[in-house]
Length: 64
Image (tube, rainbow, N blue to C red):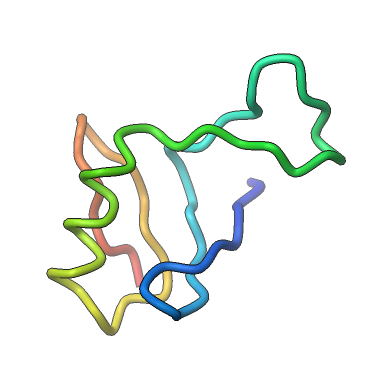
């Protein structure tokens, strides 16, 4: 399983699911699209101590 590491509110977190390669980009280019980024930011605000998030059944949840 491949995950993506990104920065949310100044903190490094992993996105375990809910991320796909951007249209026309190759994996090595590191261009990704995030499913519902607004919901991801909301989940990160609710769970400030989380270090990983996953996209499950239409919403982002803290995974670790």
